Length: 331
Image 1 (cartoon, rainbow, N blue to C red):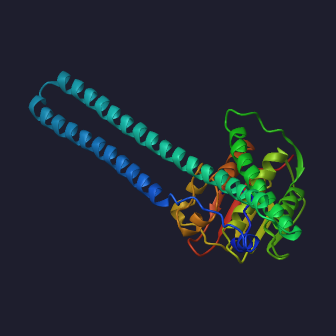
Image 2 (tube, rainbow, N blue to C red; image 1 turned 90 degrees about the horizontal axis):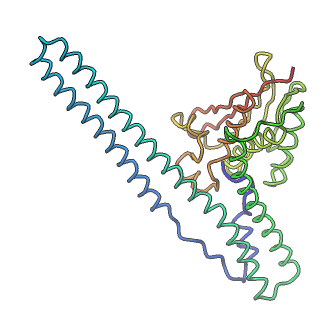
Image 3 (cartoon, rainbow, N blue to C red; image 1 turned 135 degrees about the horizontal axis):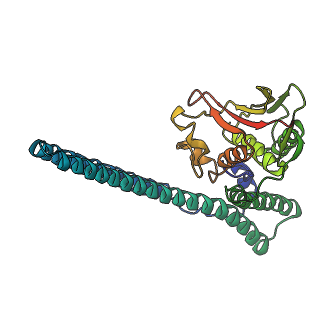
């Protein structure tokens, strides 16, 4: 997920800039990213193969040594102990090395995503300001430019807020500010915000609530989690948005928020990975949708901080997705 505020449609930009200089888009770095990722994958495979090779050589040498020294119990025990220590060292070294490579890969992905999310609206705002400064613009066109710049600035602020919120919900951050909250009111606020933000049709978002549900939670964090789920569903639904939000109670202990969309869906191998920090499901749709890969990470982090869970369900590409947020109810 991805920024909670999207830039205006491409058609709107073309209309607004008709007769004026067009924005110059920065060159795409997708090819460079693919080369870097491929290089990282080769490095991981190399170190795994190296570790496996060292263990295999050690086993072969040890088996040969045992065949020669099988009659000496003391030497045999010492050999087994040394072999176990050697194998443990090789395994730990390989594991830590692979983890470090993956961390660096995540950091690079985060920097690329954040750079794009911050640079794009700034470049757009600058373009419109330069146009207003250097070209005569009638009042109607000027107001249109102001609206687009305001939307871009909102997108910029929301991207910054996502990054700051990620730091606030880290394990070492402050504890949530718990209070009694009526869940339905929070969902209504999030849906009203999304409907106005994305200019959706009245029937695009459908909310089904069976009964009022009270939870003991941090209002700001719960609102952020639900907003991220709704934003994610809307963005990945394409042009025809049909999102259903349901709330209910499970096992008489948990409040459940289910957000179902009819969008592109998620491959089953990525259902758990989508909640990892900076992770985005690879594919052409994800490439078109802006985002930092922090939205769903925030959702799961909020769930954990409140003693709940978050997970995703999907039958695969083309079958839509369902995201579930589970929080303890207030006693």
